[in-house]
Length: 154
Length: 234
Image 1 (spheres, each protein chain N blue to C red):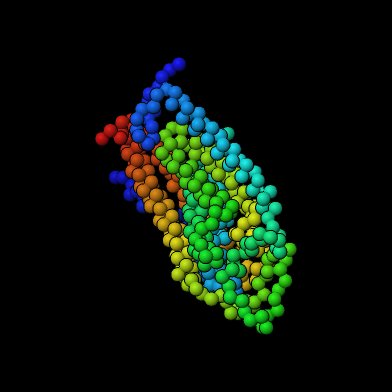
Image 2 (cartoon, each protein chain N blue to C red; image 1 turned 60 degrees about the vertical axis):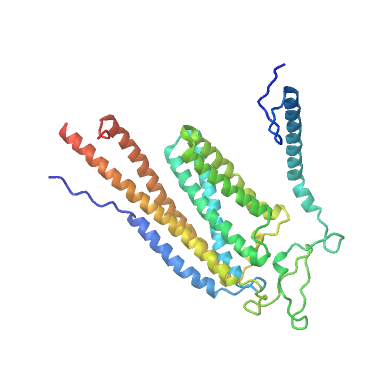
């Protein structure tokens, strides 16, 4: 049996003897197998659990339509309450361009940042490509000239 | 007497025409977006959708093209396929970055949080990371870099269908793709104008980048010739 002393204890920094090293490696190997097994199990069970989620009205049901969460509902007298479908989704019944949500988080800066970033990113890439073309074509022209002159001499 | 060398032209005529069409699209689309009705639940922030969705489409197109071209490069060794793969991957990264930035800006308002480890969001982030890794492998991977990069791109392209069907397969908080046919006609017009404009932009950027890559390959070839005759020594 080979005694390897190159591994060190993570906490103390002291070298580990062969037995300790092998023992640690076995634990790590077992740990990684368990981790991979768990990962595969969760990935495989994901769709099954998604189907098994409690239906509306059942115990443990949580509404998962967050887009409706921050809204303030209009007075019940003005609009008839729409009926939820089988998934518990309640369709929006307020008219387009009518009263909207309370703007607790201002949407304007978010919208401006989103559009501004897209335009800047695209513009940046166009500049990157245009500079690349100019650089490469200038180099190509110079090199072609040099090669042409050399060909003419010989 | 030597002939005066022409100044290199940055854009070809076709590219300039396409760029003009894209510019018109980018001038018209915001007007249609402003005219589109305000979605009552989310309010103003919903309008991020008109740029977010087209960017997501271009990311998927870029990833698919990069995957297909990389497979061709791996099996046939085609240099042109490799150039297409690099250009498409770069565009997938560019538009992917726009998706990953505009999405959280919308989510902050709609969901109350910047990010959720939702399947759609997580698979999109994974796609972006895979393509960034592929581009790094291409540039810094040494002699085996292009093949490693191509392998990664094929792997990344396999993530595209997963992203698309994720909202139907799993219970996610991301809006489903089925929301598009139910849109108000004015919203649809704004969305499809944006999609068309972004698709044309993708074509223009792709052709620009391909031109750079082709010329770089030609330059490398000429440099080798010049080196052979000792022209680069001085």
